Image (cartoon, rainbow, N blue to C red; front, top):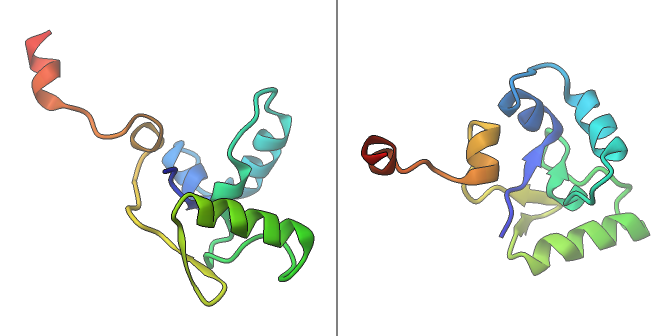
Length: 99
């Protein structure tokens, strides 16, 4: 299951707080497919008009991954604080000391 984050949370985790609009632009310009449906507004709502086809698609994709909603807001399961942790998970400190 993937991590759901707001545009601003992604910018902050990448080391660029205050650049949430750039997240959307970077995602749109990326040549590889990205899990766009995991990105939500800062108030945890989906970025599309409620009830629209795009809204229903994003909602369905999130629900298929086991993401829960409270009303029209996404409930974050396990928030992360850095982009590295979001992409690679927690580091195993013991494996760093052995190498």
